Length: 116
Length: 113
Image (cartoon, rainbow over all chains, first blue to last red; front, side, top):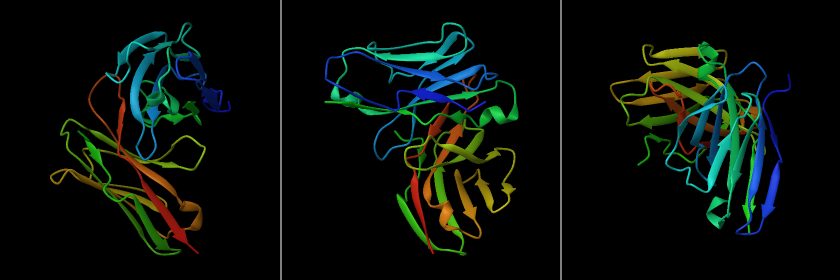
């Protein structure tokens, strides 16, 4: 297992366009999280899945954002009508519910989004 | 309203000396605390954690101390090595089912050879 994989690594898009990111978690992990990190800040929680169910969403996740995890494996995060304020690193993490190590997620390397 | 604060954006220490990174939190519902290390162009990597029922946890060169009454935790790295140079994030987790993490803004540690 190669860890948490995120694609693409970088995305430059024009304001108003839609973008979609993909996250492939560690295969046996049933929890999947999306975080966003802006310059000079720590990651901020966006949303969380347990298996295919989206169980929690942050107020940071406006209605332009949607996340899915259709078969409880990979997840996608879509941003519609992108704005310059959406420019950030989008991080995906996975963990195994119920294990002590689940408190320590495994993060992917992130997708760097630049909206011009 | 930052619930987890790292007030030092940067820290420089000499190789072989101790590095002490500090973190304060405000939410008394947090029951688990973690430190992550982040290199450029990579995701954060889990380093060490501590439960709120403990006041110290040690793993090799890394020790985390928790002072619940002061709502303060610190990470000690002894001895510091140049490869430790990275951004260190303090994070806290509450009792919610999501176990999402609330991160501080990070401290850039530079270990000078």
